[in-house]
Length: 457
Image (cartoon, rainbow, N blue to C red; front, side, top):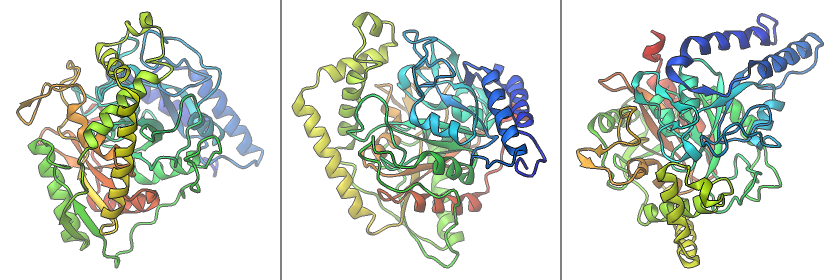
């Protein structure tokens, strides 16, 4: 419509601003807003179209960037009072690529402090509510992005994922989020890309939109030594109806507790894949032995050595929430042997998973172990009737997949009895990101998830 002149970029921006005015006071997903930035970009897109100049692939699409991503045009707080109002000197690569592609950024999306935990609350901007039920968590750490997409406040959004931060909030908000194979989306900021735990990536309301954004941000960059694969295609072709895929179904991802409503929805989805698509579904899973300790060790080590967190003066770290302080303390207590053992174990897990995918085209499983919990909690206190000891224990269904170094996508498949979305984990072989997208597109057509959040009713 934009290319045909049926709508202008300015009109698109104003429509999204109107939705933000309607919804954001209740959801609190978009923060640090500056509409003048988006208007200037929209006017530039419209001028280029009138002049007959080529438009970028994201021209006119309204977005906001996760508040863990450095942005020149908007403050970057990392959800912490230590950085509230700070202005980084340059954009992070994913932000810059979206800008160059014509996206209309108008602010940031809310996140937990330093991205720690899958519940988007912080002392700078407050808590993001789930638009399907405002008394529940929107997840995290890309919770603001997911809630904003689900309510139509944004068209596409970026996020990041170490222990599920693209997938958990996607599942809980009824949208699509993808953790790509390490290196598909280059990272060129501070710190090292090794070990390949944290990745940046796309979020959208459907697979096609996600693929479009991914095609923009996935071009290789020499500054990231893991970045070598060509950019993904913006066009997603579903699996041919005559092709018989081999599907592994893991109901518990190595014996994790999964609450009944999630378990039943995912099991029903696996049955439909078998019955309706004719794909061979077998209950099986790769080995997760050692995955938990590997993930927890490397996560703590990365927190302790991250410039914006563990390398800050102790007087500043003392202002962060207790779970962040505890994570840094764990990381500082590690020695070289601990880290080396974890990196070796990460390699072993990744190589073992390659063998598993010699026998299967895709693994499907739960994204989350439970549905959204009450918003006033920092993290759920119980899981399947058992107490939750650590703030991250209930997220291991995502953390274990991170430790395998494979692409994983969260796809909405329906609502539970409480009217809250449930996501299906679509997991592929390392480097098979485009195949994961094709499978997800096929499953998206099968499940035809079209429900809208209750706040829009």
